[in-house]
Every structure is written in structure tokens, then in C-alpha cells.
Length: 304
Ligand code: AMP
Ligand code: MG
Image (cartoon, rainbow, N blue to C red):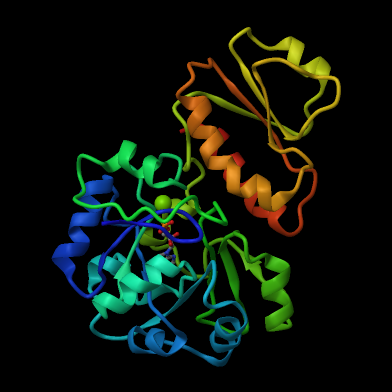
């Protein structure tokens, strides 16, 4: 079932039912090496499927319900298919009212990756889900457009002394560091050369439109004149003195929350509009939400 969350739309199934979870992989065309995030109603429910250490509890208290996923040691009973055979499980407590109702009604933890064919831009409306997976899934709950618009922040806190940001998101690195009172590393956890860790959130190319994408440090009126007639240009904020029906912006004032909400919907729209190339301007910052936005734009632009 397609379900709304505050991050992106998810494709949900009972996380304790291996056969139901196999259906998620089939519908998405997702490789079995790519583990799923399990959604529960509260930190207390999370304790039933994972071991929360004090660092995890602090993050849970600060950011749940919300767009933060924690990678934790799993408890027995979580099917291998959910964790791609890893000893860890990714858990999140979502804030979206409709998704929470579904969790309450079913009384089950729900595994829910983004509701899109594997590798494509994540869906932020029910219509995106219908277009991408409508023929493969029975039901879609329409909860309106996602308020965050980017996939959850993923933090591996199994070793509280060495927390790692596996995927940047709306809960920023700085926010996590403030709560943990220590620096947060990046990328794969030390010593884990396991294939299963090479998951989409961590693949170089992911969240990608079919149209070729070029990422630019800066866009200008001059840059726009150098491209082909059917190129689309996406500025971080509304540009002064540049107009045309191929000129777009993520947010009129360059507000990052607005940009996050619109990025995926805009990429999809441009992908369907017959442009020969999509040019994206990086957010002129590294901190805060800029890290997640630049990460997604870099993945959309990555080749192969
Ligand atoms: P999504 O498709 O947005 O639900 O993203 C799921 C992502 O969560 C995966 O692609 C991984 O990057 C990450 N993930 C899930 N479970 C684990 C785990 N046990 N260890 C590390 N990363 C995980
Ligand atoms: Mg995904």
C-alpha cells in the first residue's frame, strides 16, 4: 500500500511478514541487498525490534516523531529480508497523522521504502506514486503533498562513540551533533565492507530523472545562453534579470525548506517535459538542510 509520510511517500508492508516485504522488493524492482526502514509509533515500540543505547534514546527523544532514521542492533524476529541479512535494523517514528493512524490500526511495525521504481526520483504526492507504481500496488492513501519532501536523515548509532550520518536529511548533521555533543562522521560504518551496506541511500547515482542532469556551482544569466534551446535551468532562488519558459527555481527566496519540498516534484515535471538536459544550481552553502539538498542533486546528476 502506498502511504504518505512527512518525508516522501512510502510503500508499506508488515515488517514482521517476510512474504509481504518480498512484495515491496518485487513492486519496486529493488535489489535484495538494500535494507528497508521499519516505521513504528514510538520509541517504546522501537525497543521491540531494536536495541536502543543511550545515544539512540537521546536522538529519539529529540527528533521522534520526525524525519530521522536510526540504524540500531536488531532484535530477533525481524526478518532477514527487511535488513538484507544485516545484524542491524533501520527504525523511524514518523510524524504524518495518516501514516500514524495506519500504524495504530494495523498494530504492526511497517517497513516502507520510498514508493517509486528503484533508482527513480522519490514520490512526494499520491499522484507520483500512482504514475510510478499504480499498476503494481492495490491501494494508495492520499495524505497530500509531503511537508519535508526529502528522504529521512539516517544516523548509525550502534557505536555511540562513533555516530555516522549515512544519509543527510531534514534533521541536519548540526542538530544531531548538538544532541549527541560530538562530531558525526559520514558514510559507511567502519569495518563494514558488506555488500548490503551499499544501499541506494548511499549509491552515487540514485533519485535520478531519465533526462541528463548537470550540477553547477553557480548559475548566471550568461550560463543560460550557453545551453541548448530545450535545456531547463533550475536556480536555487528566483534569478534577477533572467526570464524564459525554461527558467525555474527551487524557492522564490531561496528558502531551503521550500526548496526541499519542491525539488523532487520539479525534477519529475521537467523530466516529463521533453527537455534535453536539466541544469541544477547547488545551494550556496554546506551546512544545515543544504547538505541534504546538495546530496540529492549530486545523485540526480551522477552518471552510472
Ligand atoms: P528508503 O528507500 O528511502 O526507505 O531508504 C532505505 C535506506 O535505509 C537504505 O537504502 C539504506 O541506505 C538505509 N538502511 C536501511 N537499513 C539499514 C541498515 N540496517 N544499515 C544501514 N543502512 C540501512
Ligand atoms: Mg528509496
